[in-house]
Amino acid sequence: MHKDEICFMSACDMVQKIKTQELTSQEIVESVIERIEKINPIINAFCTPTFELAREMAKTSDEKVKKGEKLGLIEGIPTSIKDTFPTKGIRTTFGSKIYENFVPRDDDILVKRLKEEGCVILGKTNTPAFGFKGVTDNKIFGTTKNPWDIERTPGGSSGGAGASMASGLGNLAVGGDGGGSIRIPSSLTGIYGFKPTFGRVPSNGGITTGGVGTRTLVQRGPLVRYVRDAALMLDVIVGEDEIDRYSLPKPCFSFLEKLNDTPQKLKIGFSMNLGFVKIIDPSVEESVLDSIHKFEDLDWSVEKSNKIRIKDSQKVLRTYWFTGFQDTGQAGNQVEENIQKMAYIASKFTLEDIKWADLQREKIYSTINRHFKYYDILITPTLACTAFKLGTDWAHEIDGKDVSEDGLAWQPYTYPFNLSGHPAASIPCGWSKDGLPIGMQIVGKRLDDLTVLQASQSFEEIAPWQDKKPNFI
Image 1: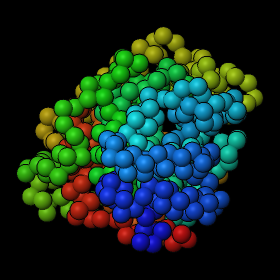
Image 2: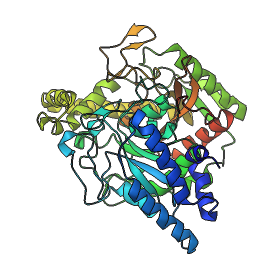
Image 3: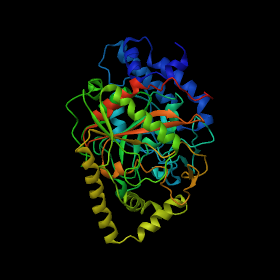
Image 4: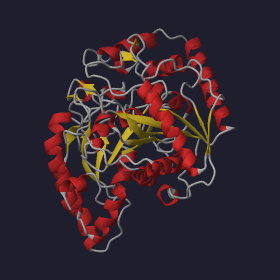
């Protein structure tokens, strides 16, 4: 088997090959490391590689196979960790000069679970400071580039994870999503990203993302090339832990085993504006609308939803997000200027501002739930545009219109579901005329992560995308 085939293989297929030793974990890891050494200098997806550790972990996995020992669910699979998740003995910077030389003594709970199930850690992937924005650059490691066009952004804040997966630099990646940070890079780099129901995956909290204000916005999840690999990873990382009072019990079933139990009937409602989106790139709109109707091939009901009209979500998000960075932004010149600005604005918030945001957030949740009284699934575009040029924190033009004064105009579809906590995925659904990926967002009822995965798997079977790879690699 060619090394590039190994690098782009499904993690689920890889698990089986390692079990039989048709491929050893060590062979796989060496193929991936060779590819990282070739590609990463171009796209800057990995900020802290851990190749010697990866080799040791791969060797351990192969020895377990040979001895007939019990294997983990992801035994021997090359995996990357976003640099906002503490990793024991491995430099973890959170993308900030404040933590430039920080080496944690303990693993994040998510990392512990991945290790317990046998993953091989390739290293840490790049992120903006504390995951505070939707593109990926920082003062320590510089800018991550989109492998489909290295003059454009891969998005963020899990941009290193997205760029690495699109480039075949590993077989599983994990990120965090507080406003779209899994779904944004998945859309812009042409991979599958899944934000579970809030609480599905426990969090250590602390400085992982911003602070307390962002705590109830963030969920962790997989960025992968195949839907079934997302289900596999969820089987590893979901489930309650006493460290996180918001964490939910582990489901009494396997997401992977249930993945192909496709529902006979689903009622899908779609919205291209959620009641407030004003601008969308025509190529994105066309691609998503065309993709939505492919679900009719499954004899599922598809119709435009008029049940969802979200109000004030941008102002609510900013109230929570800015408040979350209030303490971080006061750490001096080592902190990014935009974080300092957010902290300053947050310092002017009154108690009434916070109470207003809490109330409006509840209204947003109720509005989204109203849709799910009539439909099983909500489908929207993931983003309002494709990948934009490097050097800016947001798209300044969409469909020929100047949106430079609105930093969230390009990502209006993602953050409402951080405010509500519903499960949401981004799946590739097409390509622009200049060859850039387009993502479609699939949202499910609270706690119904499984149906989102099943709908995603069904769409992947109708419209697979994995044969497309960035030209320069």
